Image 1 (cartoon, one colour):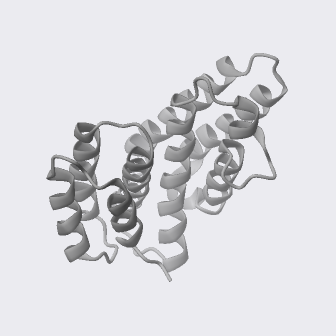
Image 2: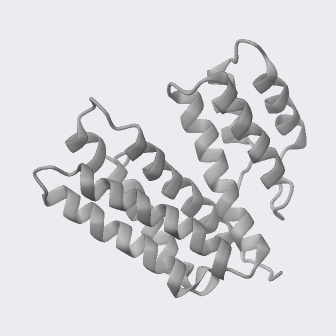
Amino acid sequence: MSILSFGNSERLFWLGRYSERVYTGIRELSGQSVERKCFDESNPESLYCSLMYAYDNAIVLRDEIGSEAFSYIQMAVYEMNSAKKSPAPMLQLQKVNDNIAAFWGMADDVISDENVRGIIKLGKRIERVDLYARGNAGNEEIRREVTRLTYRIEKTGLHYNPETLSALNELAEEENINRPEVIRMVESLIKFS
């Protein structure tokens, strides 16, 4: 296991978060405005911007993640740009998700540093809990993702607040999950600054 710089640890974390944000965001597109949610370059919360943030992190992390894993983020950007020009963008958006899923699979296959993989996956799990708590996910889905997050966070070398993690697990087990509190807790687990 290599020693990662503070900056690269944070970039890996955000690579995981942004890639998950795009993946889940595309999966949840239904009757929503595809144009605004996906392609608005002036909206930092758009899926396009999130993918570009993931890409920017992946470029800097190319030595850590490898060219093969990086290429799937690059192909996702290509498909997002194709979707943006298409009169029917959903097919290309599915290809964006296919490439993100391939990136995660490639990360497992080609990134030999367990810590690098773990931090990407931790970012992915934190983002998923956050998105599920903000969205329409059921309580069981939130519980499952909090369990996965707990397993993952303990395998990284990152500093986290164990009391907040314990409280998050307790909160996830409640019958009526307090979603705003889940969001607050998950956002405060890891601090890079």
